Image 1 (spheres, one colour):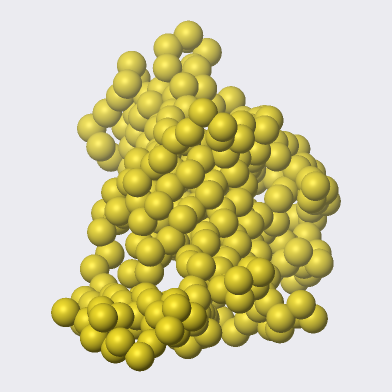
Image 2: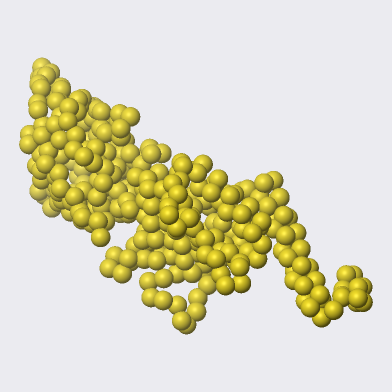
Length: 359
């Protein structure tokens, strides 16, 4: 066992320096052991639904109310900690951030109670070598997921993506130790009614000339929900996608709605079932490389499951606004109904789109 008694010639100040060195040695050994374990095995413990349309840490979507993000973070190995002095609308966790012991602070919007930002802190590190190694390691992880980061004048690194803002920085303490900070600010709406249909940005209102499958005027709230449709009894999943709903028929009965999405969060199938009449309507969508609806088909089936109506739509977008949403569309439409000859037509659509202002 190594003690200062092993070196009787060490004076009091020497002994203090020795103890500091010994503590740093232990810290280095622990860090090396931790880093080795990270390199050898990096399991992703989060097993919940992924969301390609928001920022995430180790697969955990950074979005939603506390009933969503608390169990998601917990399933990824983070433990919530509480204290009587906790700030309102703030949640605290600790755990391993890519294998590094860290603290995590979640802030929610005061009005909506939806997650707005996350701050991760690691350290403090008493040696520059430990700080530098972990800082480089985390930067590598972030760059692999979000691309290159730009340097700011204060020494921090940051990037702005279509999902949000990320900043990697550090704090130098009076004892010369350093703390690593990773800040996430989510800028995408939690509810995906607009995004799942290929819309970009925080859309507020769309006015369409010559509407076909969409409404002439559609309005979205600040959180991404379509507030102008006649859909009732809406059910959203954990990551803000509408999965079930209903429509009220003239008879007063409800028809059932179901939605399906691909891995990119794009709506690929919408099924409307009139239970009373035993009629089913199925809409299917394909998308181009820009995430816009390339084609759409609608088929209506009677109670014998025979197709009695078919509509096929192909879109050619010829103009876009500064957010990348189309404002002019040349539509080719084919309409067929059982017992009648198919009809082909061309329609020009234009849209006027307004957006919610960022706070």
